[in-house]
Length: 110
Length: 115
Image (cartoon, rainbow over all chains, first blue to last red; front, side, top):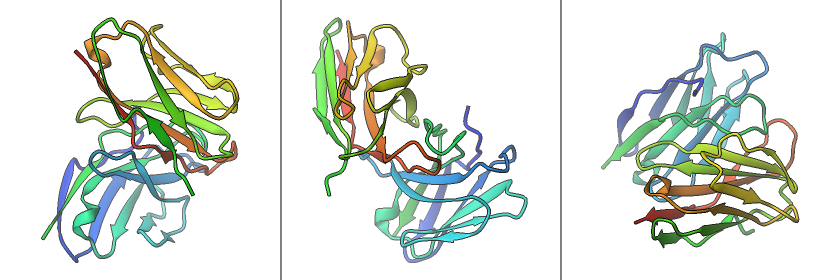
């Protein structure tokens, strides 16, 4: 079973920030949080990962709470091309099969 | 550079037919994963290779499913005597090595329809 909980769907206006939450209350001290997304008819795409510090790359920012029991993926200026299913994943270790769960379906609206 | 390539992109099979799905991982990637994605669901793990060794096949749903990676690069997922419940998208992913924090790179998948 997935070790994370995400809302099933969210809407976001184009150009606004999209904030996608994830709960992972059973996370262990050395487990990372990964985010992937899947655009329709494509394979999943890696976005970002983190352990306990906030992370930022060219795609998104990842904010992890101090107790590490939840995190938020931030897309700072959502575009229509960001419409996808977003998966928050806590693998058992770095190079093991991913457990995807149901994810959050983000709809970016013009 | 080239990403993960899967072929065919679409496959239609009659029930009872055998099928073979191919995955070309990113060159040099040690690890290779197969996932199955039913309509409206997230991908589910099938099997995992490290080089040519199949380290985990716990997700294969039945003994009709078989995967191989004989030279540690290209992998083939074979389904014998296909059934309608095998209809799904089959995704392949590769990652660079065995260390922690590896990122998996996915192909576009093969959509299998069993009639």
